[in-house]
Amino acid sequence: MRIYSFLISALMAVSFFVSSCSSKPEHVKERAFVVTDTLLKKLLIDTVEDASSAAELTFTGKIVPVEDNMVNIYPMVSGVVHDVQVHSGDYVRKGDVLAMLGSPEMAAYTREAASSDAELSAAGRNLEVTGDLYKSGLASERELEQARSGFRIARAESNRSKAVLKLNPGRGDLDYIIKSPVSGFIVEKRVTNHMQVRVDNPENLFTVADLSKMWVLINIYESDISHVKAGDAVKITTLSYPDKIFNGNIEKIYNMLDPEDKVMKARVRVNNPDLILKPEMFANVKVDTRAQQSYPVINSRCLIFDNNKNYVIVTDGKKTARIQEVDIARKVEDKAYIRSGIKPGDKLVASRQVFLYEGLKN
View 1 (cartoon, rainbow, N blue to C red):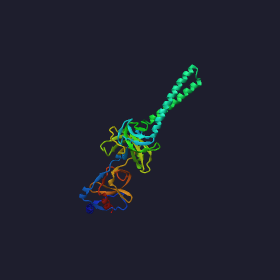
View 2: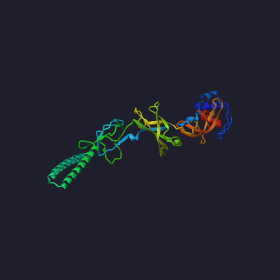
View 3: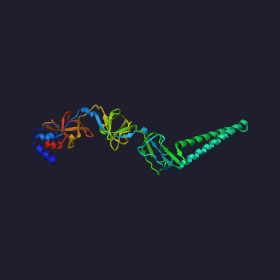
């Protein structure tokens, strides 16, 4: 209320001539207007930036692991989980045990392996005896070939059962061992002790990822799609490390809009040797577009919206001020890119401009 009273008193004390403007709204009337030095000193004045500065666009983004460096681990057998040894965020090496799974299927695999080994041993002895008999003339060539065929079948079955056990490593007759196939961090864990799992469950139990390289997924606004292309240089900062800049280039643009957010995704790969970038971190991304057409830039606080149009108050910083309609090309965070109405170097009132606008137009 004090500010309003101060402005009313100051506006009544104004005595400068309002400059004429062809783009002035119809309801604005030319009249003499007076501003005291006291009010002028309290106003915040912004300068319109050069059009070349519009070549750098700012977007938001999200840090995610590189898909090629992620491994989803699914159960190969059904059973009950026990002895979970890791948690989300833990670092594991290739071959480390993640959890154990008690499964009756492991008993069947172990029995099959033992049975196939016994059959292979029997087939081997049979082939040896038949071979001796054949040399002595007591066995036919057909019987020898049958012994050879039986040995080959038994050997193939033994190899199969051993391969099944290798794919389903176990401990004892019932325990199935869940191991990490790669080195990395546990970025997803969906199991707990005593949890029942089934092989037809579509969800993975663990996800292990190498975080030495990360992707930054950029949200490109629909109005800026034409200004961004693969290969553009980017500078990335995060809320956790605002002073550290990660440099990269756009390696891929997903040529479709998100139906909910109405943004198009672009992807940047960045090195993360110190592992300071974490999955799901928020990122600020500045893209050097080098666009052929760029616009003067102002702070959005200078804008006045009235009757479905946008205006600013242009001043020489001394005694003269005028209302100017502007055409906005796009907005990015607190920046507005102006297609027409002002030029670089113009001085704009950036505080209490709404009260000045009301006084000028009336």
